[in-house]
Length: 87
Picture 1 (cartoon, helix red, strand yellow):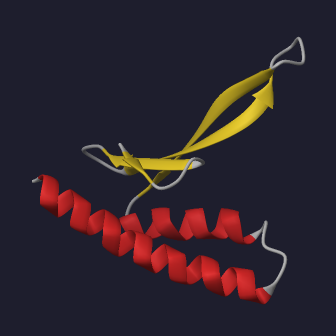
Picture 2 (tube, one colour):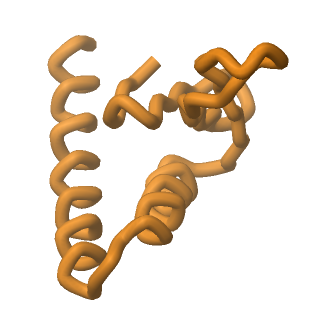
């Protein structure tokens, strides 16, 4: 599993990329509970675009979106280097 940040992680199985989004929800008694939402993608680029789309919806300005997009690119490079270093 590759951790993107505290909210997102992703991994690859034999057929697809699996993106896991960690969300704090509530159980039936109203207590906080960690929920994991999984979504499935064919390519790593689709995973990164999905992360970016979900986070862009929370941005308050164009400047924040630009920062998010640059961060996405640098994280992709860092993750690729980490994976290559571990192999």
